[in-house]
Length: 214
Image (cartoon, rainbow, N blue to C red; front, side, top):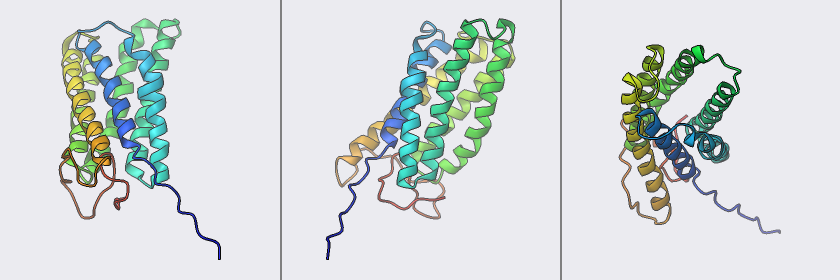
């Protein structure tokens, strides 16, 4: 009788997804806050926050993690879409007078997505919930600012930049915890228990062998 070969375990993609999201959010948010020049974030949006995070989402499908797959794939596509919009704007394909309004609708649409994901993140861990909570606040401030005619370093967009930096720091912590906790049987960095826990949840920051909701 042939011996059945056991498939090797898949590394937790959440560390990469959260890291790509955190770094790209940080660089764009420093611009929105008026601290850094524009366009530094565009390459990151295509390749780290975009491609790498999207790939992490595809690997989350492989682990059976619906929440992580949806979150990372969506925000990977978010970054690539935003970078593409900026390139179209620079190429003169988007009227400059429409740019802020277009950005407002863009961010509003993702804020709607983020709202229900924020609620479901309460079944994951406190760290992941805080990522979605701070991101929700960031997106609300940004789309209100854009609709009000504010650009980077102006009005509510500036405040959105500040909160975006905080969002990045929380996401970086969740990424670091995922890496550190994967290296030992006993967790090193705490991510906090789920706020809403009917079942054990698996998503960014949780070991891949645990059961998950959804």
